[in-house]
Image 1: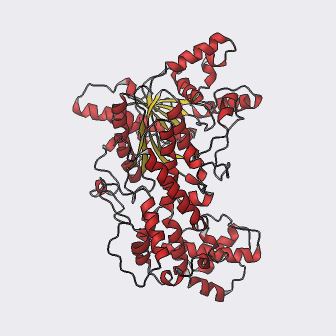
Image 2: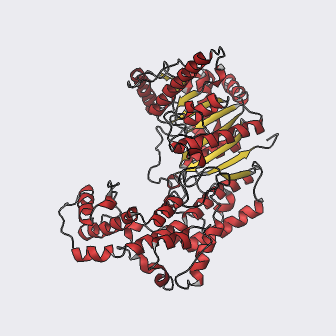
Length: 575
């Protein structure tokens, strides 16, 4: 599992093919389905494609277009060679998403085998690790945790740093379940507090089990996870990242106090869970604005009951003399080795962790599960919607990496013509192909939603031509509403009169186009795994350019966990 799946030359050749193919069909991946009517998207398709696609049933779209594993293809008419080539190339270039161990197929059973007996509880995960954890997350933490444990054994390393740890579900399984020493970093202090609380509840459950079995053994102190509330800055150096981790070492450690179930609002996490540290996002806090931010967080600790530690606790970091600098360098060199992991690390965070893995000598292995590709920064779009804004101005040790973006990471892909991926293409790569295939085969009423939104866009622009692709958010059970009611709710959300008169003749004509809307969206969805492949392959090539082989593993069941790829790598001995 930890050997490269194909050579560096094969990786580069695949990247060339991907760039050529995606640039050729960028008009599909860059289009917005809500503009189906306003931009007349159907007639942007090749003339020879339109007649053979427009009358396909929904199950036929699933079988003939989207499902690469479907073997019994029966075409109602002769498809043009260009369409057959488009479908075949898209399937051939995308990394296979099927997990062999799960024996899954596209649009197959939603639940993995471990949930056959109980749809909400994994039969392969201990009951103490299932509390507060949804089935999807149970599946993910069990499989990723086992993989991280294997990587630790390969690297002879017992320490793990879990970045973007959320409520600490993976962290608890790694530490209490697999006996690893784990430090968890999460940007949201509320989630960190919850993680600490859940740690205490798990210890309480373990204590009860020990009392039942008259067992006198104790949980090793090193197995209690350390939680840090802090933002991992994608522009900061690996040294700054290590200083974030070291800051927690300056807080006196102690095992979490067992805490039973409680419905009361959490008031303090130190008393109810494992070590919980809140720290700043930057290595230095020199400016007045940063000091102001620091004082705000210090004040907030009194309200939350959470201990605050900033990186000034490392006195050598802020020393102006040479002895202090030398002391810091020695201190960083002596930091213990660890394995880095991130389960669905959002946007640039996954790219940041890979850069730390390459550059930091203390990181010996990594498992990276990415998500939210649309939030990745690019040269063409350095500030995409949803990008986390730094809480303070960059410091000198961050200036050197200001030009680095989340995509592309590798020099090879950066030099390819047509490698650019738009925000819309990357957003499309986050869609769940398997879920849509399932809707098509079931001929679900949910398929109506794209047509409704595209119809509404026409009436919005009739009144406000400048209001393009306005955010409406999800209208609950919109597929069960008549369009007139859907339009009334949607118009109000963009500040237009809900009673705006609608041409019922146009409404009826557009409703008849729903099949074409679904077909067009399916064509663009066929490119989603190809775009994801390009992003992940670029990261593999980046690692290869830095002397590290990697493996991309479809670890999770894609019908259950759409972002199912795990990028696994470990450094060779002596690197």
